[in-house]
Length: 114
Image 1 (tube, helix red, strand yellow):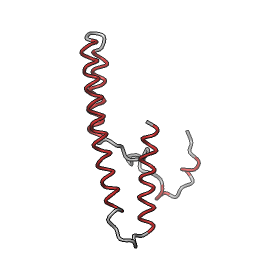
Image 2 (tube, helix red, strand yellow):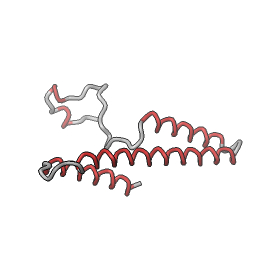
Image 3 (cartoon, rainbow, N blue to C red):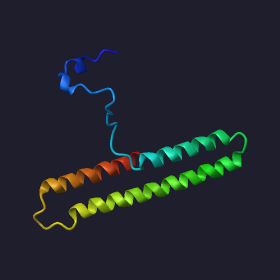
Image 4 (cartoon, rainbow, N blue to C red):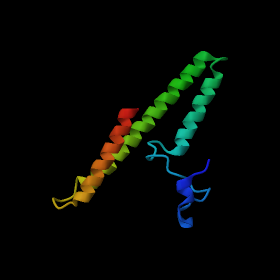
């Protein structure tokens, strides 16, 4: 489909076909971990017809592992956010505080959408 807005951009603004476009906020799990868990879940789904109980046990284990990784990731992110503003003196720049507030809002809204 023809993209008029893209066609009107100067050549230095047109994306290279190999350049990745950010699809949203940073993932809460590392990509390799997310991919590994998704692959294991797909294998469990594929095995369900032949071994339903084993497939369910595997799916439960994958769920538990994903939840543990998510909890760990959220705890690390919370510590980093907290450390970024908590120990500053009273003259902490309002821009730094505003940035921390945006980060808290973004991560909390993402959790509320899950």
